[in-house]
Length: 215
Image 1 (tube, rainbow, N blue to C red):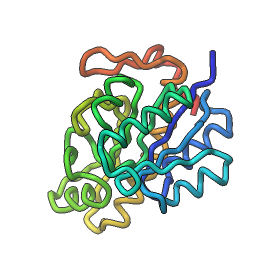
Image 2: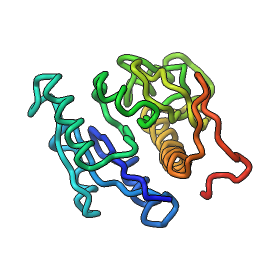
Image 3: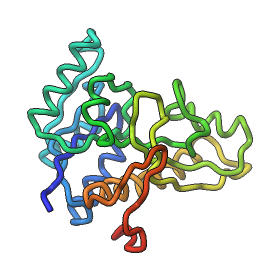
Image 4: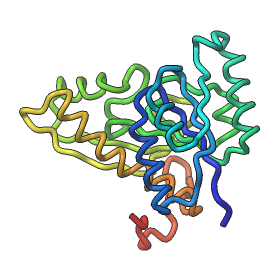
């Protein structure tokens, strides 16, 4: 099986990027991150990429204010690097239609809640956790899903839950959910790399699921 060429999109600290790098270096994911694309030039995730000799490129609203030019530049980089899979790891921009169509069922996103709850436009980062706390739900978690033209509407690959305790706050809840993200995202990428994810309408079937995830 050929090694998968992966592009990771970030906007911030890149802890999910780091979890992917760690699992790849341990040989648990049959893929390599060939480029990290950041929407912000000061994202710490770019520092993480550089530390592991991964090329980092900034393509954001500041250096590409025109939406079409920004999307074309993204596609240009993806084609140049012969990318097989796009992973959105804390990426706060919305991918354009051309990118989504061209990489149909080849874009994975991680969301810090149990979709279809607390998701969609405006739900990202601490805003999600604040909404969870305000609503008073007893469980939340993380979701890894394929990306379609909607916002957090693509077929779900994996989900993991955490209990919301009465004394939880933004910090404690965010840390618990992030731990789940760091576990689920590498698993999903590994399954994709093994060719074990099959999209059937709204559902994602894990082929030969009794084999587990090698984690």
